[in-house]
Length: 158
Ligand code: MLZ
Image (cartoon, rainbow, N blue to C red; front, side, top):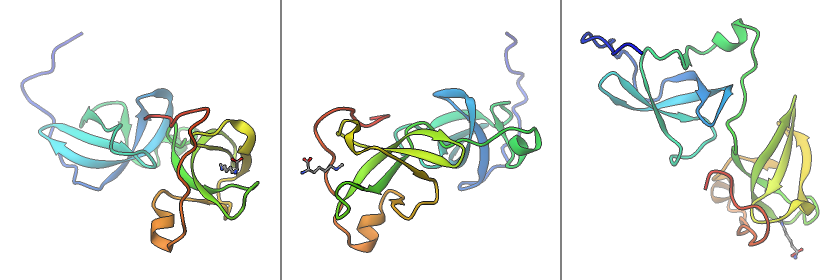
């Protein structure tokens, strides 16, 4: 492996710019990421839908980051990051909105799994279902967000 030359690549990125990045935990998957920090010739990146616990750093000219549109241009499919978090209606107890995790994606369908509960409450729905919300939704609307359960799967990424 060659060392990098003494002429570092120019860093023309700005905070909050979006790009396509390989998911570091799942390198066959390309996701949308946001520049959340700049250090010299490196970018601090956060996959959209992920939290600040999984930030990663890439050199500005890394092949693992590409401009938006690159994946589609090459016939690829953008993916949500592994363990994208959300708040979801418990369809067996529809008065409850609970912390949840995407367990699997198939085309436009997503598998909703409830944090701290075994599979009994899981369901498949479309990605644009009105039963699923981004993290922070309940605190915006004033709905009561249930605490996670204490059984079964813990939170992915925690
Ligand atoms: N009382 C019920 C509520 C479970 C709610 C789970 N939500 C994901 C029970 O304990 O089965």
